[in-house]
Image (tube, rainbow, N blue to C red):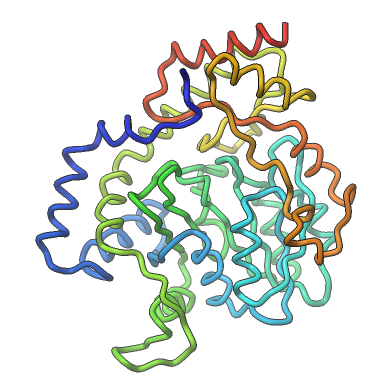
Length: 363
């Protein structure tokens, strides 16, 4: 059996250091917004070459609070993609804004700048750019678009920890970068967690207020905030994992390179010049995806689809008014994509077994 994902091998690799970090927190007697969170925020900001990072409870909150910190709210429109985890769209709505869904570039599965441009109206106030699967979006074109129309530019980096665009880490290119530390991410916590990074001190100050009931000092509230705080245990785990992030991403790229070299009968991920993929997921395309998925399951090879139903075709979001066919590249991707096993602890032999199975099925 080759599962789609396993978290235990990575835990086993880091167990001693993580257990020591958790013991340190347990013995400190400080569990919320303490020294571990402050240290992680400083280290995470420094990793990206930025001034500030603000830890929050999860990645969805990271996007929502970034929008709120940037002044986005009721009556505003925010452009993003339908080809993403629903968390992206949910966060926009939670901030009070309306999500406006644009199409993707089918080669990278990220926001198509031309489609985004065509979606701009007089109410558009922000872009939320998703670096899906770990692939950086076309940030030059999207940043130019945001500057032309004076739009807040937020990067959804939930799947792209450590990915780079033309030598700059994603999250550090727009106004703010939002991260999830859900356990399956390239840098996952032992529960939920998130963070927002920025070089803008006003945004950082607002984020710190928003995550903690709008407090400016104890029991003094300037805004109507929320409760979204990264806890000390998660911060301690993340400090351990941050030190290994580049090394683990390098291993992910090795696995991806093996897939690239040994898959001939399916469409493999693209690698545009100047973009360093973090390979949170290795996603292929096949016109007979469902049959391929079933055949691999029969051979005890786990796969998943990220994501089978785009946001605009979900029953929950029919009111956005986008019918079947309105986002053709997004819909084509949803019919054809398949995520293959990729995780720390997956061996070269297992990768080659997956490749051989696919080529045999498609042969």
